[in-house]
Image (cartoon, rainbow, N blue to C red; front, side, top):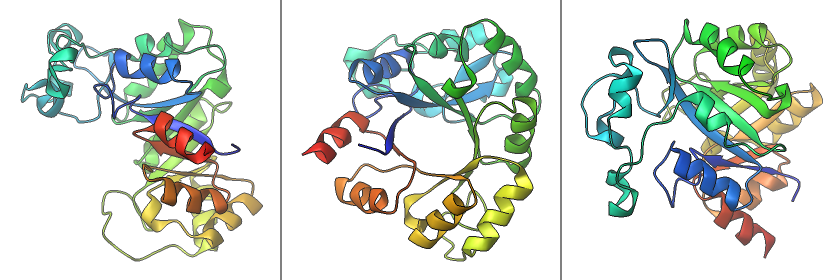
Length: 250
């Protein structure tokens, strides 16, 4: 299979999202790339959680930016998924990176802005990871441009829900292929990572012709995956990457 399958928040259909359990399960099932979401805590640690509040996955209605790592460590990030996952903890970025095999890759979604970028330097310095293993994604234009400037050897992809910008996934307005290429060039990044409902073959072709990568999130249905693969997208991010890979191989 030529397309890269990215395990969204780890093997998140089967295990609690954004936990070491979900990531190690993804690697064990043969994943070569995972995706995780990262925020900065009050005391300057980078932790793995999708939401900026701990309520949904930990049952604690407090913003991560107001919490210390020690406080977040006390939360149960697994019991919402079932009793088998009780006492699962929220990991740090460094802990997630240490689960990676030598040929593994991670899409690091930056949810915080500003100070988190400086903290990344210290985290990366503590390990043997190569630039090609650490890919950045972010919705915020300033964040994705800044992280690419800070780590020029790493790939950085701008996240979009639609063609005109982040957050509003319902608008049907779109960039033309040339406008999309121009925007990516303006940001100084390596490509996009976009919602599948807004993917057109002409945009994929234009991006590739300009030397940019075209990635898609989140794809769980095999029929949709096959349609996107036929457009020659570079990667598909999925909550069920292992099962999707098996279905595509049939």
